[in-house]
Length: 454
Image (cartoon, rainbow, N blue to C red; front, side, top):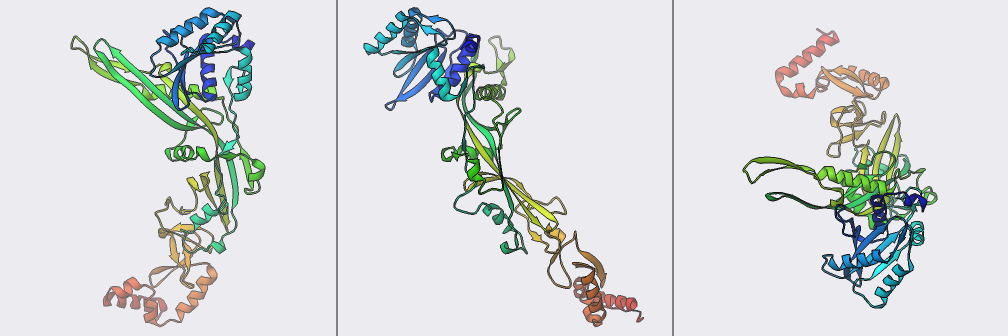
């Protein structure tokens, strides 16, 4: 306990706030530090369906005597709460016998405001239960739960097979088995309340009463808030987690990686509070009693922000790669059983331009393996099958460009074209042939010139 004893009173209150939140208490927040009136931490619990307030006094060192217990008992009585109330005193040290006797007597007499005492020995036991690092006074992340990396009712590559169904000219039977990998990425789901009132001589000029919930990547470095779709995926599936069993998932995925939480739960709480302070800070314009207009920056205090919960969980990031001849197609998404949010879609994307997205039409080129948009997909003249502009061999016939799989096909069509009657050659450019009689005659004349007939 020596290191905890070295903390300041405020730092010890921060630690205990995290401890109580991890023990399952609700609406845990610190009292205003400028005038706490003996109430360092305030929180709530539900007993037999009824909500009860708990007023906590934190003593981070030394011996706690009877006067401290009596003072808290009085503070409980004056605390404004529409329901039952009780007290708690926590200390890294110990309680004197008179202090313990006073608290015991409140319990025995069924006092409406009983007080629970937690000493250094109790804190050690709690620390073991919730993963409190007594060496730095911070709550560590203890998490072995993950969202489901795949839907057990279907094959692990069902999502990528579904994506390929949108591509024309390719059958499921033609697709090789993709390489499937999963990375379990740590995230934290944070729920926090911000309640602040800003007053001047003219009265209240601004209020904040907001509950915020967001999800952040929790690997090394600064936490990063995830996109809204990913946050919804996480929060809607927190009730359906499974054990992160790397060996079990290794039977499904070719590669399995588990990343570590980069910071302590306490540090994520501090980051969340700072983020909400910045988010809610605003400048308010108001008119004073002297009819002069003023601008006031309203920034909530740390004590105005109460972090209700920090829920750690692993978010599976699944990546499939499919090899098709010359190309590799990645398909990556965040998974929660049958639900997923796409992170990278290399299937619905033209390899020859910037066209992408599921609203476009894409065609597979069996000649080279490319997936191309309609602007870069042509019909192979000799075989009548799709070919992309990236691999096609071209030559002009009847003043129109024709596309071929290779030089062999091109040479075969040259021979076929040479033996065509003039009217069939003219039809190789249907736009001109069907445009007008004059246009058709021009094409025929051109062919005669090219053929050396005139």
